[in-house]
Image (cartoon, rainbow, N blue to C red; front, side):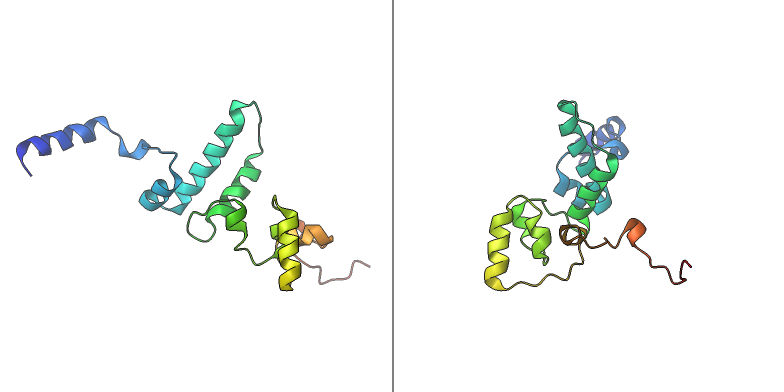
Length: 141
């Protein structure tokens, strides 16, 4: 490295605090800092979009959306194309294009294990999460 570029880099690092860098490009943040940082970026960006319209969203909902987008260890979009890869036809139908997913599931003879919260809610089954996560082993009487 020549003297000029070394001096430029030193000056750049003095001005720029790399611990406070931020970008709304989720993929870049995931590849540079990891999937957990990408998750936080998604939460912040969704919150900021709603805030422009004066809408407050419970942080738990934002966390759930971000978790769904990152739970495989990679960042994937939450859109109709990404939901198509989901194995639960009922969960697919709870997205935005119900008829299309219903028709496809019917024609392919798809089977749902009723493992996802969305699928359980559709058929009135207790969701295996929160208070539905455990069973009582001792009779109540």
